[in-house]
Length: 75
Image 1 (cartoon, rainbow, N blue to C red):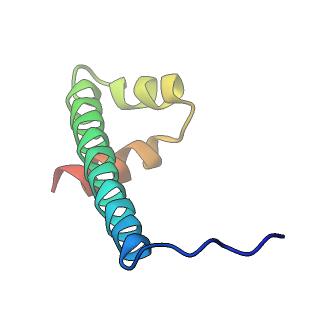
Image 2 (tube, rainbow, N blue to C red):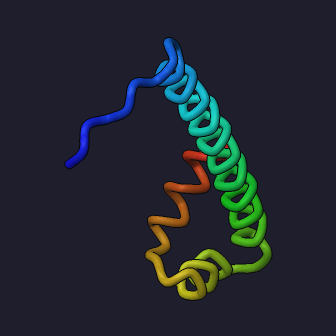
């Protein structure tokens, strides 16, 4: 491999800081999306008797998984 070119002072630190900011913004957006999704799944699970199982079947997960994620993201 060729050696890394000489960078102006602070360039690497600026890059690392920008990556950290972008990652934290992404993590926040993903968490908020998950929170909204599971809140809505919790609402839909209460529509009628057996709705939680129907939600689980549609998502391809277990009913317990729906319960745990709804509890995790709505409390």
